[in-house]
Structures are given as structure tokens and as C-alpha cells.
Amino acid sequence: MSERNDSLRSQLDRIQWCALVIGLLCVTGCATAGRLDAAQFFRSWFVAFLFWIGLPLGCLVILMIHHLAGGRWGFGVRRLLEAGTRTLPVMALLFIPLLFGLQALYIWARPEAVAADALLQHKQPYLNVPFFLVRAAIYFAVWLALAWRLDRAAAAQDQTPGPGVTQRLTALSGGGLVAYGVTMTFAAVDWAMSLEPEWFSTVYGVLIMTGQVLGGFALVIIVAALLMKQKPLADAMTAVQFHDLGKFLFTFVVFWAYIAFAQYLIIWAGNLPEETSWYHRRFEGGWSGVGIFLMIFHFFVPFFLLLSADLKRRPGALAAVAAGVLVVCVVDVFWIVKPAFAKNGFSVHWMDVAALAGIGGLWVAAFVRQLKGRSLVPAHDARVEEELRWA
View 1 (tube, one colour):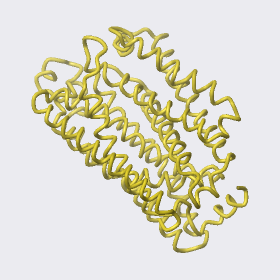
View 2: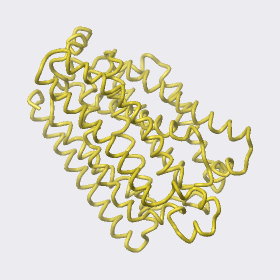
View 3: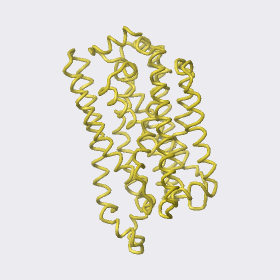
View 4: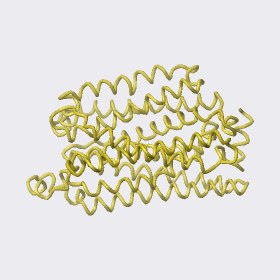
């Protein structure tokens, strides 16, 4: 962090410690209350975890896209993306509490429910606790291995000039995107879709992955806008780069809407009870208002705002839109997961908010700590030199 001034380091230190304190206080509060209401604790923790795990995974995907495809847009935010991927070990640790609450989360983990339901008995060879744990371990092993190898290669590139490391990063990213797509599809089914095991969707995994990448782009836009005046990031992040990032944000807003609408349209056209039940739960008992909120603020508002080329070239304005998108991503995860638990209509428990702030505080503290560890711009990459010439 030699390029950064003491003022910036002091500011990042304050953010890190503030986030850590908030995280620890909220986690402690949730854990204490969880002794009285364990089911609510596990459900609140799960919703929060599912959102926050999306940010490092979204960063991982964007980083691999950049290594694979190149382009000027990614050089200025590459260190931010790498910092995000290095928080995956923290998220792996935060997944552990959920292992003690599988019966509170999943009906297929309750032996008495399986014994009384022929459908659950049919799905038991896949939906059972031991196999669930094995698959979860595989998912995290793949993600952690990808993040570690990409980070190790990036560190080697800083030390050794030449095209060899760049080619290695490109090759690793190509296979890594395939590995992420496969593992995250299965993880989405295991962790979220199996909350309601009678329901299924062939695009569910794509919908979850799109939300993760959208959140990743929103995150790096916000952080880049906050740090863009600091050397050497100030030389790499120009209006052109923000415009490119804004176009990516626009693209994934549209793609999210396309996938969400396609899933709804196919289920609506089929009109099969085992498929429509998922939407019935999410458009009854007060949940319809959340669905309408998502339609307006997850698609229409950012869509029309991001049509403006001028807005995408103004870091502050673009970061404001990105912050709004990130908040709506939280609501989206809440709308996808919470109705599976709230059988009596819309509800928000205080532990839902506390768990979100607790895991978020710990994650932000880990992210800032990783961000302080390296220069904001990669070294010994010929493409970086080209980027700086375009600045």
C-alpha cells in the first residue's frame, strides 16, 4: 500500500474497525437471541448469508471474465475484484452455523416429514444431510481453489514481467467460469430451491448467478468511485472506464429481468399446480408489494437511468445507481427465500436485519483488510500500460 497516502490508510482503518465492531455486535445479538428462537436465527442467518456470499462469487466471475476477454474496463477495478475473492474463506466460516440448523431450514432434513411424504422419499437419494454436506464442501473447495490460484498468479505477475502469467490467468479463467457455472447451479438448487422441494425451475441457477454478478459490478463501481481520486487508481479510472462498467451494470440489469420474466412466463403458460405454487406464495399475504417493488426498482428504474451515457460517465451518479441496485439485490434475495419460511404472509423479523448487518460487517471488514494489502493497480502487465495510455 505504498502508493497510498496516510490519510487514505487511516480512513480505511476506520471503516474496517467500524464494520468489524458492528458485525461482531450484531452477530452476538443474533446468537444470543437464537438460544431462545433457534429456527428464526437459522432462517435469518441463511437469508443474510445467501446475499453476502454473492458478492465474492460475483467478483470472482467478473475477474475471470476480465482475464479471459481482456478489455480496458477491468484494469482499474481488478484489485477490487481480487480483494473481494479473497474474502471467500470468511464466507466459508460463516456457512458453518447453518450446518447446525438444517432441520430448521429444510423439510427434507426432517426424518418424520420424509416418512410421511412420497415426493420427499423419491428425492431422498439426493436430498439427504450427508450428501448435502459433501456437495457443500465440494462447492467451497472449487471456489476457494479458483480464488487462490488466480490470486497466486496475480501476485506472480506483479513480481515477474512477461506474457506467461497473463496466459496462465486466461487459461485458468476459461475453465474456472465453467466450474463456477456448474457448482453454483447445484449450490442454488441445494441451498435455496430445495427449501421448497416440491417446486423446480431449470433457470433458477442462472437467476441466482445473474444476481451475484450484478451485485459484484455494483460493488466495484461504488468502491472505485470512492477511491478514484487516490493514486495510482486515479490514472487508471477515467470517465471511459466508468462508462464501460455502467454498460456492464445495464446489461446484467436487463439480463436479470429477462431470466426472471422467462421463468415466470413459462410457469404461467404451463399453469401446473406444482410449478405455480412458488409464485402463489410470493404474490399473496403482502408479498405482492415486494414483487412489484422489484419490478420497478430492479429493472425499470435502473434501466431508464442507465440509458444515459452522461450518467454512466459521472462516477458519483453511477455509484448512486449502483448503490440502489445493491440494496434491491438484498430485497430480491429476501423475496426469493423468506416466503418459504413465512407461511402466514409478509414479515420481517429484527434478526433478519441484524444477521444481514452482522455478516455484512464481518465481510466489509475482511474486504477492506484485503484491499489494503496491495497496490490498487497491477504491475508488469502490458495491458495495464495500454490502459494508462488511454487514460
